[in-house]
Image (cartoon, rainbow, N blue to C red; front, side, top):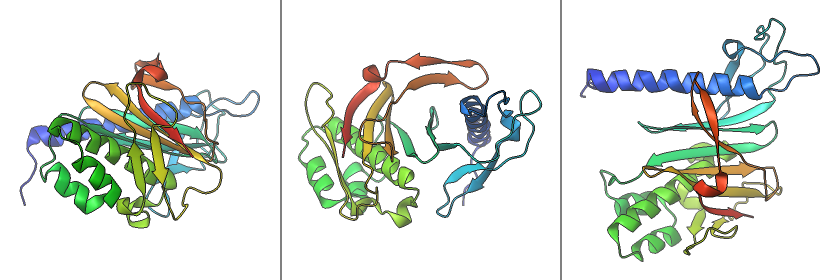
Length: 249
């Protein structure tokens, strides 16, 4: 095996630090305690690993930011994803399952788009990719499908072993305008339950594609998006401006 270079290792450590800061400070800010209860401090938050390895909040008795805030029961669900250049964090109320994924676009996967698609995707998705004549369009659509499928699996909390990517289908329709019916999900095993769900395909900037899946909040969950720098603040984004496509079932 070949050890990563010092720069690569340093970059990875930097990303881990930023990810921890983003998760802790965001979850602490979103936590809503009872009347007069101080929010927990970011350091007081405790985490656990779910049955399939998904990180989650754990009960914490740590001191709050002003000395009294506690988290007797986790009130938030979250999902974290990252590339070398972007972190994505999705937060939802307790009982709402959420998954997010992000990838950098404009690069060809080392094993080739179609080789990966044939290995991991459902046949209908492979056929849809093969029907695209432009290589750049095919590579971008592959990344869109990948993030949509990963977001769904993360929301299920099942992991790829529990919900293999080729056991369900995602279709992204064509058209100049994003509509609420452009993304279609077909999962014959109905793993998402009976409460409905929603998928959004997002373009946070020109270099990345991201996807968000929300389960258990009906077919039209309220969603807000922010650009944030850990410890420095955040700026609200117009969700419609970064939405490429959306769908519900």
